[in-house]
Image (cartoon, rainbow, N blue to C red; front, side, top):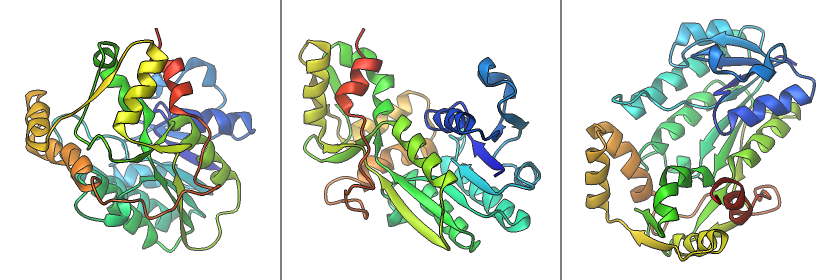
Length: 288
């Protein structure tokens, strides 16, 4: 099969690329900057320089593709995240239609089923709809809360505080991006079936931020306390970082829309549960 992948240097995409190479597939990798690809992948992938918001460029880059692993990349700083998602959705949908691509595995998110009211996740919901409208086989991977979201707060966590806009007692499915990559490759190499389907990727268990703080404290050998940041204060903090209004709405809207009362549409079961625990992830990535 000719498989096209996106975001090959991202947390999930990098795992997808390596697993495909190990499976004997020479994936086509779409990237803004091929020079950023790891040197050891030279000869094992076919890099194509393209911006995923460039409709004509994406169509050209996916000619002959049997399957596509699609991730909407982050919008450039200072842009409009939802506009970026819309441009990506239009590009991939056009590619599927014009090139007759036989299947897409799309990295979506829990909450995309809401379609509206979940900040940046609304852009993933719109992309799901654009792919569904093509009529091609598509699997939407509705992923949980990424463990890697803790990395920007590593210094604060090391000092004993985990700040979050989420209610401290609200459970979320926490997942390691590595596991998402493995699920994506299993779907890319296996049968997709007709039409659309949705598969959740929930990690091993649902965790509240209070529980996350306790796990991190046990891993780091020091007390870590979860601290709730109310919505207005969180939005002010994002603005102080230089985010524009659209960016603040996109980020703050996720915790507001997926807060109290929200439960993922897909239940936890043997298919949606993946193995990497927060404890093992934190030992690898946060313990110094």
